[in-house]
Figure 1: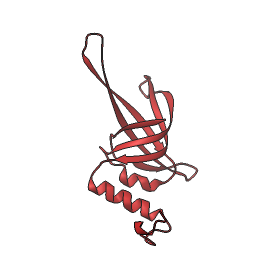
Figure 2: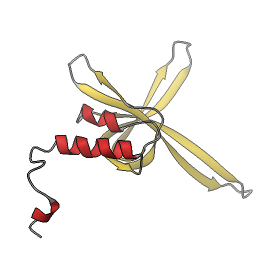
Figure 3: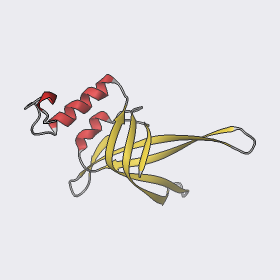
Figure 4: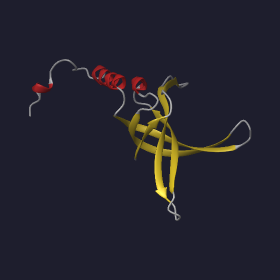
Length: 130
């Protein structure tokens, strides 16, 4: 499943009790439709997201960044400290694609991609075989 939205705050990295790192962030998706009276209704849905593949991605996941995520959705329910019932949507992210953003985040993205590539700096686009 794919969802597209903007980050509501900067991502943070947490370490589990099994010493695994997870990147946690949340996004807001917007939708609009017209009701029977012809009024435009705006609807925002919030997703709590997790990304387990690499903690380095947290550097580029900053508030306001537009992202397209691939993964799966799960629902969760819990009772708060105040005794109130709550529910939320979790998105278990397997792929992140940035759309737009500031030059700073684009630079960080390029740096993160290059750092993750062991053959970085060994050739240019002119070296492609096609």
